[in-house]
Amino acid sequence: MLNLIYVFMIIFCYFIILFIIGQILNNNSIVDIFWGMGFVLTAWTTFALGSKGMIALLTTLLVTIWGVRLTYHIGKRNIGKPEDFRYVNFRKLWGKKFPRIKAFFHVYMLQMVFLLMISSGFMFINLNKMMDITTLSLVGLVVWFTGFLFETVGDHQLQSFKSNQNNKGKLLVTGLYRYTRHPNYFGESLMWWGIFIMALSFDYAWVTILSPITITLLVRFVSGVPMLEKHYKDRADYQDYARKTSIFFPWFPKK
Image (cartoon, helix red, strand yellow):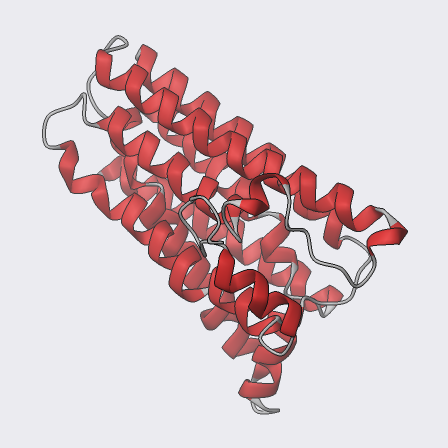
């Protein structure tokens, strides 16, 4: 229990720093850039406090690879740009009364809670007894890498498509986007299911199913897929694409 208190205090301070930076820059998008690094900090903190077994080291490295890549990808995309449209819309909803206090709780503290919930899988591994690699570890590793490929390849394909001026105003409907409208969000979800499977090597690890369920529900029904779908709802070409292509789970397009 004491270890969990240490972790909470460190992550709370981390989000306080992000909040201060966000208010100085008047841009709450900063929390998106450093979202991944919050997981990296949590992973290495729990690893340092725990038994440091082989599964713990492997899981911590996986979280680090994911978190650093995500931070680089979002930072490259967002640094120097205006505040993301989602946070602009939040400001409109909040009004002029106490916008910073509302941002503190509705953005930073809420994301801190989600981060800790999603981190429960690898926190359970890192803070549990020492254990070597198991069959479930390898299965979880395969699932994790599959999700990682969907996220990284999907992001790369979209970035390459947008960087080509000939594609301005067009939709990406090839590559992974031929099978799912949101391959990066699907990959994100799948990675955390992989870590959950790795955690099942330990007794009572089923309680950490909160982790993959939380991230899956978030990206599929709250902050990921729905916002992008709403953003494109008035485009006829996107609606035609949506009729043919799976929204989340990859599948062959309808004819």
